[in-house]
Image 1 (cartoon, rainbow, N blue to C red):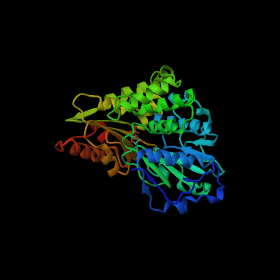
Image 2: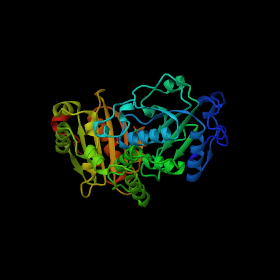
Image 3: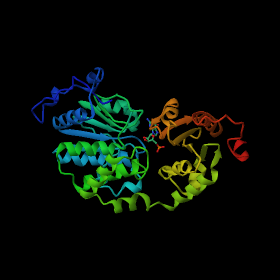
Image 4: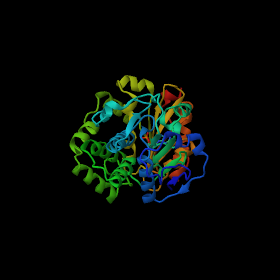
Length: 374
Ligand code: 5GP
């Protein structure tokens, strides 16, 4: 449920630029119990907050995906159309498929030294999920934090929180904000938001896709988003290493009952000439198999005894709860987390959860080929 900190000023402030000294500091404002707002109330309150401030830092989660990048850049274009000063920062590099988005060259990889009037976090359930350190935000001394999220695992960690798990993408939430702002949606803004919605709905296929999704996409195309150019860049410009890596991951694949899993080791990534970003989307092939209800891809991290897990499910099977159990988060049918341990240990732990979620009996089995069990 969206919440708003009642002590954050400027909601009823006539001025569009109150003096900085009138803003509460993050630390002061965060301790105040929030009040709940409905969706329209959230949009109206957020627009007033944005109107009442001048400089913004926009960021999203580490290892950014299409919704993180598209919604951040879309919001940057929206704020700039409102006459605001905006910095967009991401802790991790922007994957090549998203280099087509307007304004991507302006994304910086470090928090700016100057203090913005507000930090806006998209798709993050806490400050640290941005990949930047919490103390770094405190050093920036920003006046307030704004959290816009659509994850089931979203939390009210900021001064102003708009969390809508019904939204198919944060890009859609930014689009709703743009429409309510009455700013003209430029082709640049439209392209960024379209890419966000396109990717976070799995090309309009996930359960979150509904009439509002298509209404938004239609309007963004009318505003000048180039659907074909975006699709070419995101889906038809894969580096050869990514496709080689996919081959390796698919040949590692195991299926047991309704659960499918696979893995990518550091050695396999190096052999394929692939990068971490090239692992994106591999898990969708596993959940795409007939009869498979839950799937996981395990990717070894440079820490060696640590694996990133990408979880997917169909229907009512809730992999957000499993990711949450392991300290991660996400959506009911798509979530992620990080687990420490050997590949065999991590695989056993996650398979136990997935099989229980699918009501499968826990089978006695080797979870890895004999060569890897040694
Ligand atoms: P993916 O498997 O594509 O990396 O992530 C699937 C979904 O889960 C995305 O919406 C992503 O934001 C979310 N997610 C992935 N890893 C984490 C994590 O460690 N923490 C949280 N809170 N969400 C995650």
